[in-house]
Amino acid sequence: MEKTDIRIGMVPLPEVAPIQIAIDKGYFAAEGLKVETETIAGGGAAMPDLISGKLDFLHSNYVSALLASASGVAKIKIVGDAYAAKPGNFLLMTKKGSPITEPAHLKGRTVGVNTLNNVATLTVSALLKPAGLRPEDVKFVERPFPEMAGALDSGQVDVAFLPEPFLQAAAKTLGAVELIDPFTGPTADFPIAGYLTTETFAQQSPKVVAAFQRALRKAAELAVSNPAEVAAALGKYTKIDAATAATMKLGGFSTSVDPVRVQRVADLMLEFGYLKQRLDVAPLLAGGAAS
Image (spheres, rainbow, N blue to C red):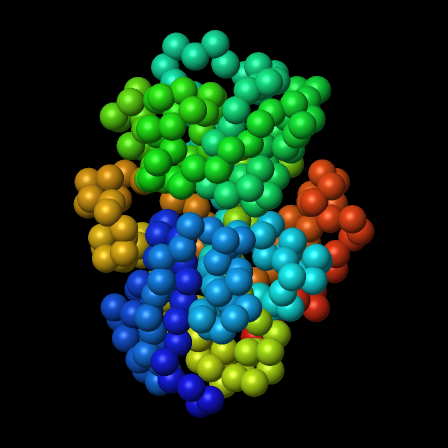
């Protein structure tokens, strides 16, 4: 093994539960890895830490990852899949009594997302198109997920893009209501996020990457087969209580990266101007990622 101590940057969301499971069950340790996790606001914001080597692996939404690659900001390799959207585990929400009751009402409104130019802004852009609107017709503003409900309640944002468990909290504490599930129609089962490393790290530490993949795959298999393990893991790296964890609508965990699915993300990015030309995602996959 080229090194044994690794640092993983991750957003504290349900989608990274397999990382905690792999720590708790000793899957990383069995591969000879000692793992330290670091909480991040988003993949795009933490990309500099991956590039600098402060982080060895990064949990990132695919939009930020593909943007970094296409722009030349970072030479990345996708080493594993994290999550795909499923009905109800992400919502666009408004205050109770809001005049915004359908996507067509979003013109001129402010939409809160955790980071700009990411999977949230892309899917909202796709949602606007059938309503005859363009991304420029709304104003996107950044708010961390834990602060999003407060921003909605105070009027800083008119609409909030929220994942579980934050959407549950917004509904219970503030009476926020669903506007629409953003991952429907053309974005149904949309790939949300994966795990990245740099091309340099993948070349210089192939045994570490392979060990990480084996442990992650084993943990993802357990997350898929036994959701109770996900609920148990959530209490270790989030502030989600057991009652909330038991009622959350989870997305889809995966044991491998499907290049066809990730290509959907790149193609939608091209349609909405995130990319200047078509990006072939297949070369971005690290060895073993799709197995």
